[in-house]
Length: 129
Image 1 (cartoon, rainbow, N blue to C red):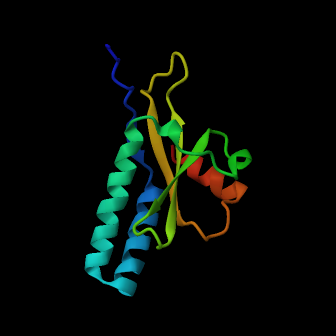
Image 2: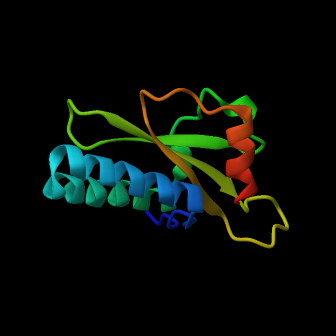
Image 3: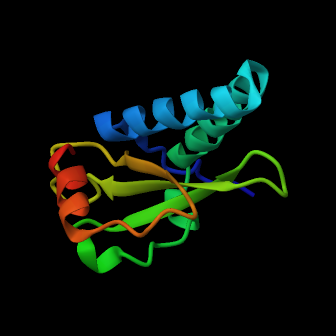
């Protein structure tokens, strides 16, 4: 059986998402130590790396109406009983004739218990893409 390889997406970490990740890891380092923060960083980056293949396997977000682009979330949990982080991302470049390749744009990373993204925050995130 001859299967075509899955389409690969470029990954682009927007500045806000990079700042979010850094802030969460610094806080985790203060709360749980450098080893735990490093382990969490490695796991989070590995999970984000999987977005380059079939990013649509992840669910859409409840705040979708606040975004112009199709936006989905990867939920990352370092330990089965630990807190989850929401990694919000938009998929762009799939439109026919698009000058850009299909790309997963990481928009925002937040603790899953944080309040939903507002419309103005969504616009700020999309302005970076």
